[in-house]
Image 1 (cartoon, rainbow, N blue to C red):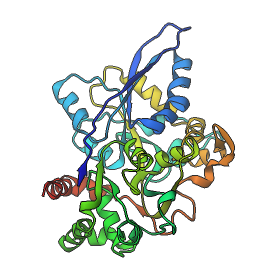
Image 2 (cartoon, rainbow, N blue to C red):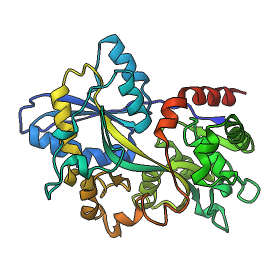
Image 3 (cartoon, rainbow, N blue to C red):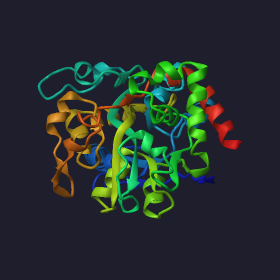
Length: 359
């Protein structure tokens, strides 16, 4: 096995030079093409509108840093983009600020935000922004016959080469079961049993010696580009960017996708809470969510944003709505992440996953 241990934080600052800055907030997200889409659709317009400064930092997910800041009383992050299970866990642990959904802007036709956001996108301490998906991609130049199923990802005899996988149990366990023939609709019923968990790890065992592990979202497209792997688990927006913006010869497979929500949260004790709330209200209005979709193929979480989705920002021939994880074709054998399952079992399963890696 080959391990990649890359944890990095990058910082960029947006300053509107013509306006005296009234304040500064730090917005933390996942980096790469995703953060780029947020900078263009959210950060720059909000900075221009308010005269504030946005400091953008990248992280690799989880609540460890948020918890450390809150417990130390030294909160330096103001807005953090998190997965749904982390939003729920952080709220339960009291390390996130409560956000009143009735203060969010209505849709253009007057529909209240509480009726416009998709199910699950508004939580006590979080406001959703995107639907995204964990899928797998492959290098088209390596295979005469293209892989089409999750089972193909685990078939290293028919489709030789190294595999890239995220160094985390979440989604990897679900994909292992689907790769072993379990229909998406039965995955969590099975994963809720000891036998199901054992079966998932047994399937992972079959390719463990062929895996290059990644932690940051920018890594899997680079692993493919460098020829270190022939297939990799990847976030759909990252691989779309590699194909559309960089012209890479990659294909993607929607079968067995695990889709999820990302949401904005505010760490408890943020010194810029009001500015952070204003940023979230601005960034999750109908127009801004639709604007982001022109930069990356993550779906907006507001119903009113869908008809406003246009073409790719640098190529008018690419209709972005056709590349979202929520198309009919993409959802044929798709699994929605069970955030309650991971909120309840994530710590235990990720500990077992870490122990399995260390064997």
